[in-house]
Image 1 (cartoon, rainbow over the protein chains, first blue to last red):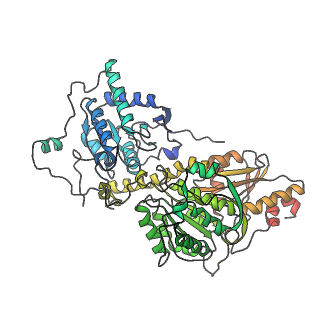
Image 2: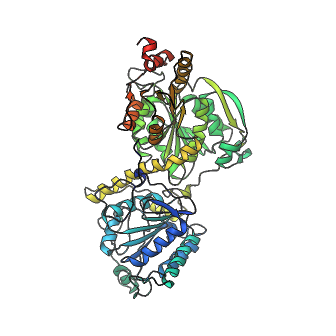
Length: 226
Length: 387
């Protein structure tokens, strides 16, 4: 009898249209577990991998989604604060939001947003090699992760509010503010233990060109979402 | 009347596994209705067609008794299935139903539900597809359903129809699934015949749907996610649009895969195996399973041991389970109530290259004929039956 082996879900590019990890036999972790490159591991082991990758790959970026960007439900604000705290611990990090899921045409500003219709554009433009998705609805996160794995070399980390993501290289399910803070704590510990961040010389959160322009009060030309 | 107001909310685990059950001798239509009574359904919309009408007429009585918040007859199946799409997008628990030609009429909309990630339960009381005109039992329509991205469960009898319907709502609304669940049953043979059904108290109901905890944002004017509603990607003729659409379709089928553990949990696995050591296995779903059980009994009287694999879930299909269950088999037959043999194709595709065995291309009945036990025996034990 043929047994299906779980795929190893590493950074891409994986090809034109790689099969979904779920269809290759990768299963979701349960509460207290994590998923690392297609394998179920303990939560702490997943946090270690996430922390190490975020500190040692180029141009780390946090992609916050609507579930942490809009203060529409109890618990959102503390989680959003925890995400900012996490970002501040990653030298050279950028924060590029996924504020909604509407297709953006004729072109997006990849320094302003990431969009699930063409997430690879933002990854490519900003040369992002590791990222964290947090607060994105699972359907949109999954299609985004699949396209990133298909066409980029970005290592994707997901802090999922629900059951996690098979197409992410490292995924933690059922994440509230507490789990976000646990990742922050792991990053702090690794740095204390001597891990030198790749962008160790950078201070604070790095603004993209578009964000810098807004900061300086310049007009911000962006896609209108039509 | 406020029937729902007098019910107590319990967890699915308590409802399915712990609550005491009492037996009632009821029809399949009544069994589905009793599942709906306990399912905390918000809205039911359908268009009448035989043999589905009886259940939806009874669900209308549930509405009158206060168990549902809304219920109406749509203008036709396209209208019914479109309206239930809209209802599901608002985050409420939804039910619709149809049969044969009605299902075929609304198939375009049915096939759009999974892509829009719409949790709902769709009851299918199978009947022949026209033409020529027939209202008799025949489940050809399920062959079309297999390609739509819906979860498809196939109930054998009245008990299954109760259990699968109730479980369908819970499976459908799991965040990692967020797909419609079609619960099919062979019309008349089950819907209009009585059988014993064990049910938990009607004073219990499932928790309501939590639309804020699903894979896509529901439409809600009070919250910012309304602005991120479910715009389809604009279909430009460029690679980005193609890739996005492809990734989206993959996601529907990935979600089916994620439904496996929940289907296994609430349906007690995706298959049921009788006599796993037998060299001749009958693989069946729906009421063909009941006919096959009788064939097993009669074969045993003749001194022949047959095996039986009951397929409970058609989507997701129990691939690994079927391969394991057929590891001792040399000969497989697939009795079906349709002319196309859609289950036979599934079985062949699943077992291809996995075992050295013969898969017979039948037996099948269609157009309303029931399957005589003798017919199954002719195919399963050809020497003994003189075939």
